[in-house]
Amino acid sequence: MKDEVYNKLRTWIVTGELEPGTKLRDQDLSEQLGISRTPIREALLRLESDGLVVTKANRWTLVSPIDLNGAKSIYSIVWTLERLALEQALPHFSSIDIEELEHLNESFKTAIATGDIYAILQADNKFHHKIIQLSNNLELPPLLSSLKVRIQRIEIHYFSHIDAKYTSYHEHQQIIDAIKKQDLQLAIDTIKANWKNSLDRIQLDN
Image (cartoon, rainbow, N blue to C red; front, side, top):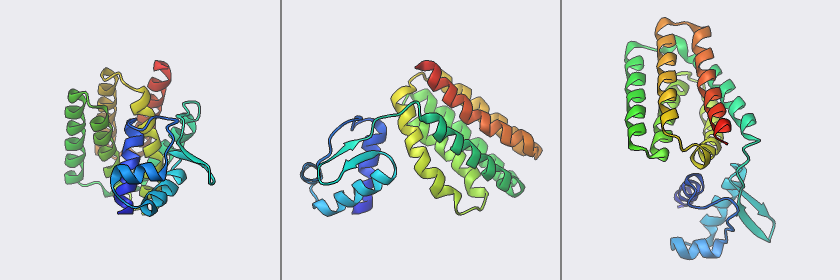
């Protein structure tokens, strides 16, 4: 139950259904969701550790503001960790894994055509998760997952120009091409560029 509540509230915050600055009262959420206040309190604590809510002890809980100025710090950590993931994953890529990566990128392109920004970001996340998974580094997925929730929130809030997403599709293809060549330097350069260009596009739009 507490996981369901956490996932629901996190989705509402990430997609903007709960806007920055919205006051969250456990009693109101309890009535809205039809559950007791205990799992809601536990979910809010997890969301606070994710940086998605801000709590003042015994006073209030608010949906965190979106800090575009702080986005660079988050993105730089993500691309550094994903470069590490790709470096560790590169020797493990089979032809089947590369085909799956290509399929995931085509699914990403299909999502772009729908114009659903949340679906686009989910498809993008699946592409990157495949690379992280093949690193066989169990520490990386939880670290990147919490960071990417905050990135998705930033992109959903600011990044509405769908045409620019096709650029990311082509950047994914460059990553795949580097993996096929087993070119480590090119691979880690292209995955960094994919994240850095995403950040640059958001900052340019704003």
